[in-house]
Image (cartoon, rainbow, N blue to C red; front, side, top):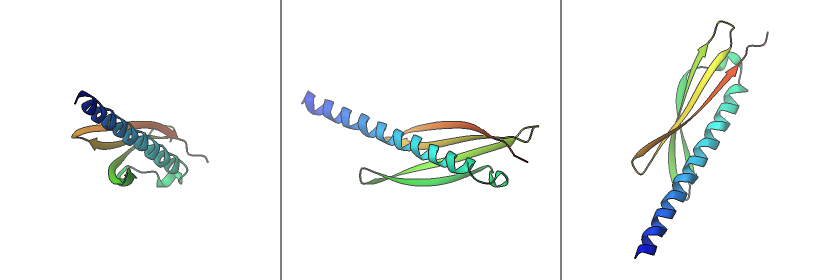
Amino acid sequence: MGLMEMSIVVMNNNLRNEIRNKAVETLSNHVNNLTTNSYDNITTGTITDIEKIRNFDEQFTISDNVTTDSSGSKNIQSTINWTYRGINYSYTIDTVVNKYE
C-alpha cells in the first residue's frame, strides 16, 4: 500500500514539474517574440495560452507590464500564471528593450 502511495506522489511531482517546465518555455518564447516585435507595438496586456500536456489542456495566463523610463527604454515584466491541484504558481521574466533611432 505504501508503495502505491509513493508512486502517486512521484507521478504528481513529475506532472507538476512538467507543467512548470512548459510554463517557463512558453513564457520564454513569448518574451522572445515580444522583444523582436516593433518597439511601438510593445504594450501592457494579458493573454491566455493553452498548451497540451500529457493529453490534457493546461491553461496559462501571461501578463506583460510595460513601462518606459526617461531614456526611452521599455522595461517589460512578463509573468505567467497557472494552477495545479488547487495551488497557484507563477514565473516572471524581466527584460529591457531600447528604441534604436
